[in-house]
Image (cartoon, rainbow, N blue to C red):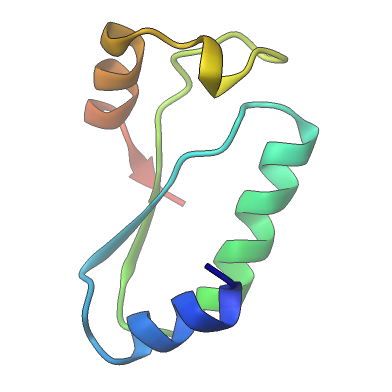
Length: 77
């Protein structure tokens, strides 16, 4: 999905929340920032997963418990 398609769906009111789940490194942080800027001003709560992984690791290396903790601890972006 492109950012334009995501923004169009959010603008139509189809979602109440967009949860950003990017790898906790420079590239992931930059991606989250770009998405947040693109969705700015739209009627949706933007949250981000808690940092349950060590910096520099990958989401693919996370186990179920880490992801559950990260989801439960998400916060506004």
